[in-house]
Length: 180
View 1 (cartoon, rainbow, N blue to C red):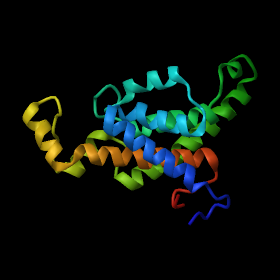
View 2 (cartoon, rainbow, N blue to C red):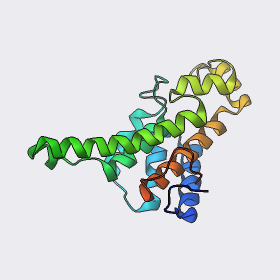
View 3 (cartoon, rainbow, N blue to C red):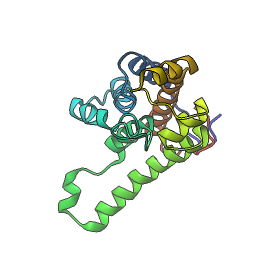
View 4 (cartoon, rainbow, N blue to C red):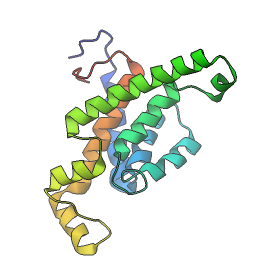
């Protein structure tokens, strides 16, 4: 139940969630898949932005730092709430105000994410889920990851995060405890 007033369209959110899961399950690239699912369903597709997002996958360049589900979804929020380059030619106070508004939306997503998954760091989320750190580039460790269901878990994280970001795109007043 949303406590912040405006209700979000659950049919649209369901489509975003399903598309994000499908994309990651098939193609990998958590950041790109979360962003692209939101873009496709909400009609804000930008191929160059989606292309750039792939390098944030695997926790920024595969370094297992900030989770790609979060960074890709944050980019979608930035597409709506962020400032365009024209602000950098105008009054600084207006540019800063737009920046802070965008950051506020991403912070709402990040705080929700941290509460849901225990961290915003890919390495921490993976370790908590599997009980250890495994490297998919090492064949026997990749086999263990598959046995433990890490890929499915990542698909669920991406899908839920894309859904949450899409809800924030519809209703910027969502609180951290609001259900969508």
